[in-house]
Length: 531
Image (tube, rainbow, N blue to C red; front, side):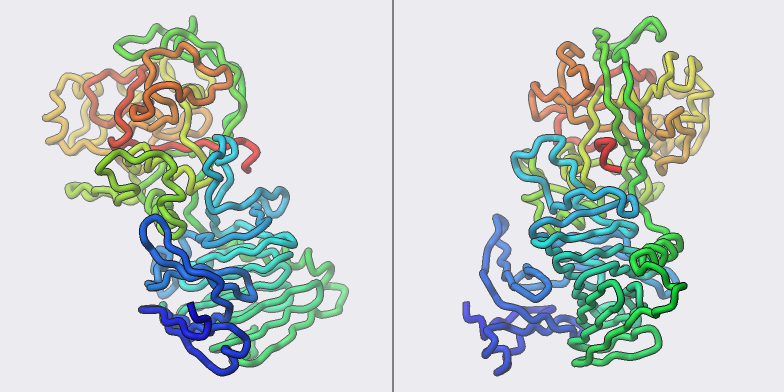
């Protein structure tokens, strides 16, 4: 391809100038007027036939679709403010790390794990949210889509993403930002230890060191506190030398905390499940199980600590993961063979009456559940982890006690309390399934019933939950650390928990399974060291 002539449709048009030709670089006119300058280094085509152009810029490599149709991150509009619902890592090079505990610990950041990754290796968070920090090493670079703009983080840099409209704190290093004007009158805020900037429809470079912030504007206009910096202009903002300022890094942390404390962002909530010994199946402290497919024989396990999502993943959680998967390519995320005729991560079919709510549990095929887990840097639970977390140390038949009727309706969504008519549990078990469906029994928003002793909601009902395990007739051969058993038919996977409407009595020991193409609920786990 001729570097001096590149035409991109829809959102990008190429501008060719004598200066660009001399420098062996193309200048791309981005939507909203911001410009991206760089060398076209290669063209490629992925397995889906999508054509890509790879461009080397001063801020790192950028990959653009040859027919670039702008895909924006889902946002929520509320009183003329755009709030981020996710930050998408588009491309990464070298050593890029993320912290979710104010910089105390740092984990490698990857778009997706290697194809030969183990379950533990795959638990590297590839997604970001406001409140997360990202830093790069000598060889590290990254590009992040923040909804109506793109951030390029150069080597030896560190940023913290926030969410007041759209906001980011640059703690150190060199950062390039392109902000679209695709959302009129909306602004991206950039905070540094020395200055606060409001940006709209432009490309600019921020370079932060211990004492100063340098701003170089390529197009449009940047407002640095009360000063306007126009295209082709640079400005250097120097920190005050007064003793009250203190350590610039400490001031950056304080500024970041002030910003962070003012933001609300919907993200997954994790419960720390401490490790311990556990008798999986039944023991003398619980009544014997009943029915087919029960969890026998008893297995004595020593389960290490792990993190588990407080609730089942919601429809909104699934769609957020689906947006990310679209950006990085389904083929890189859906690493499990998809059954013939199935389309990966297709949207959820919503209920009409009553309308489905975004905070109800997502019901998706098993291979989609695996993809969602990868998007959130986690994995599916094992059967052992589910049962251990369900009981939360209880020795009674149910985690709340021995009552099998009215008390359970305080903890779980069942046919008796989820339809247009509230009834007793005993009455609901005597009615035909068809009658219960006419009463409108359905899943409800997660986290609205009482939790178990460890703070986990809806673990026994609302929606059956996929496990990583393959379906096996009993618990023989259960790994002693509670990890998944995957030596069975990979097209049939285990389920734990119950649906709102079921013909079977509620029993935490009962094990279910189904084909991976069927839709069920999702609960994720991560290693304790992740937080």
